[in-house]
Image 1 (cartoon, rainbow, N blue to C red):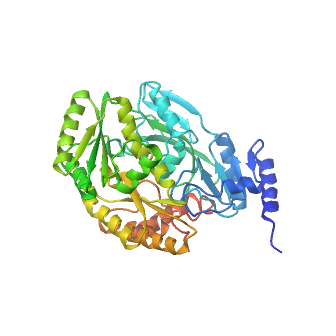
Image 2: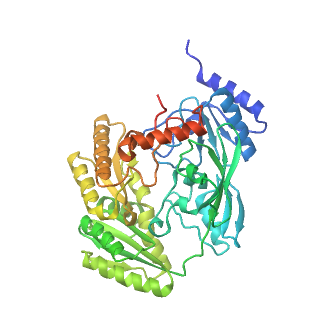
Image 3: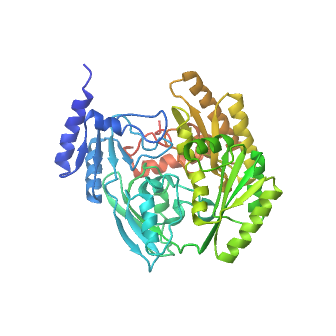
Length: 468
């Protein structure tokens, strides 16, 4: 006789409520189904129960409960991940941190902010701005994604070229280890080289080593001025060449983003911003800093864009116009997601001087496999997002999508790039990890995982398969 999943979930939940008084536990079939997936297409598995701790003590108790029973635990924030990192494994506990969302302290004297892991990224940025400071990382999902999820995935964003990624702003972390022990690593000191920098192990670890419950962030003064430009091209490769030329000229703009023709037209259908539908590519360029430096950089970049084939360069005259131009890039994924039943947003990165070759590869791959791929991304740091507009119910087409993805990742690696610049490995890309980093590196990762989580209960099967 097959066990009743609902009955098993109910029994587990009853035990858990007794072990952790006051813990919110969801275990109905409808509630478990609602947490069976994240932002990744075509991946789902149903947990045994979903728990919503309100503080670190409850997180610790849940992990002690799970460790004693060898129950897998998958941590989750808002579920916006795009590599399957927070997709459950069958029968696991999903530990959702969205109720641990306090911004505990903004320390203007030390330029730091302390927040719980469930705080929304946009709220963190707003709290910093409220005291005249700046938190630069701005992932596309920042209005809903959580700061703990950003740390677990080492999220990037539109400002990554100049300001870096989440890792560059982490000063300390509170982490609950798989056995329930609570550790703090890092502090408010600008300099600290006492022992191993353990916090770096948890950044980008995708919930496989410990559960991040608090984050101490570095803040910086905001730029005094900003100028936004939009360059229009009738050739995608010329847009890529412009990016390389700007960097070669030793100019580091705040933002250097691009959209291809498929994406441009989807954005226009969705948002009606007024983009030129006939363009093959657009570059969104933004300079910030001291007013004089911004004017000088902007003039130089306009000249470089025109020298590399831009038919038109539009400079935003007002803050509202600048926001409208930036919205073209920020709405790209939402616009593309309306086109087909299934949207697969991929993430490959190459050295900037190989961008023209990588863009050409994506275009040729789409033609060869008869697929619709909209490409946009952070061209300034070589991070491209080829986005497949498909239908997961069409098995033949999905097979072509898989072949195309393999070719795109293989070419990225061949060009000295990587399989992910900011989305993580999760479930979706673990088959490509060895080719990207080598078997020795994967073996070292497994050893680190075994040292922190000898029972293998934290987010099992993500990044790489367990050691045989």
